[in-house]
Amino acid sequence: MENKLYVGNLPYSVTNATLQSNFGEFGDVTSAKVMMDRDTGQSKGFGFVEMASAEAAQAAIKGLNGMSVEGRSIVVNLARPREAGRSAGGYGGDGFKASGRSDVGYGNGGYGGGRY
Image 1 (cartoon, one colour):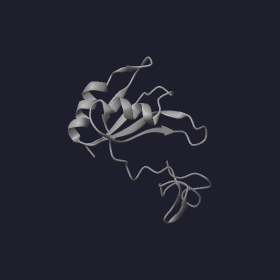
Image 2 (tube, helix red, strand yellow):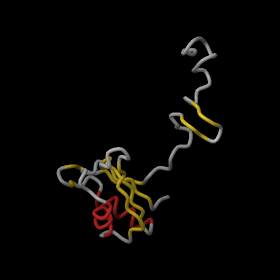
Image 3 (spheres, helix red, strand yellow):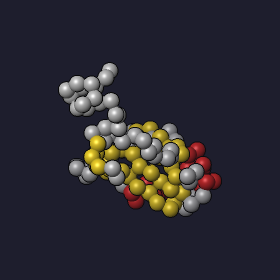
Image 4 (cartoon, one colour):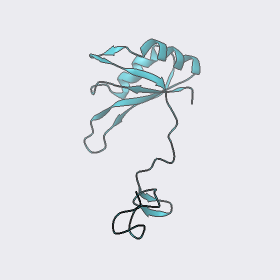
């Protein structure tokens, strides 16, 4: 995981290819992905870059963190692993759930409420 970088505050014009070429100056890039909104197809303003080595990742952090790209100061740091327990609800392995809280919903403290 020490090879995967989070890149934030990106201008919306940055593409995967641009990201890959900019980080390529610091070492081999395994993958570069700008996150896109699935409804609009527009950039979300952040992405992830995976470098071939931890040394290349550290060099990219030192070289690019805080750099101005099209007037925006980008943020580059090590990516954190996804947190498993932070679901907003939806359909999972055990069926549909409105939320992960057991004290909210019908039959648990009144109509439509819960215990607060």
